[in-house]
Image 1 (cartoon, rainbow, N blue to C red):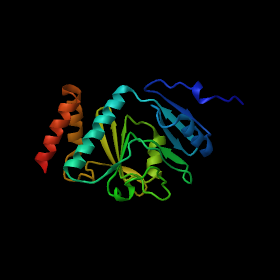
Image 2 (image 1 turned 90 degrees about the vertical axis):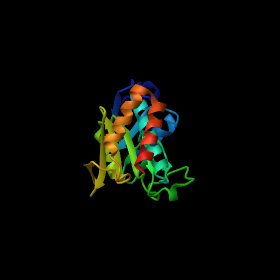
Image 3 (image 1 turned 120 degrees about the vertical axis):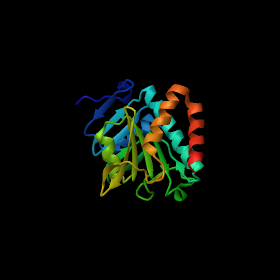
Image 4 (image 1 turned 30 degrees about the horizontal axis):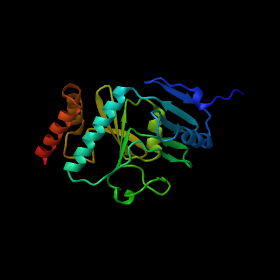
Length: 213
């Protein structure tokens, strides 16, 4: 059997590598070896490990959508705890995933001050954002971990997915922001950020939110 070291793997931006028959202990060891300060994102689904390296355009979209959500929460005075790309995992389910952004909203109070998350005790994040996701591995993980609301952004389209009976169904409405046209509005201001720049788009979005209140 041939054994490769992690440093021998090179994943170009925009690509992913799938590793099969990876044990949970090996997954944990890989997380430990790679550490927290890395560009690669990992997803583990019952023995299959996916490593993906995002493109710069992915990172730009991820940041702007996350910023828009934070403005919404602030202006609507909805308390939250943001956990970014934290690794959410459960050994008993053999699933682990690292979202592009994540928020505790309904369950924010019990997550204040948390530095480590144990999903056998702690709830999953209430809202997760993923950009340019085509991997079934990750979607399976979010379903298994019971993340109630998942936003997928791909090819300039936003899809809101709500967990119903253990599976995601597409929705036009976000239960987190039920009175706002989230899909249409997020897409409009993401596009504005591309043409006007990040800061002007965020200022315009904040003004728009205040007009809706």
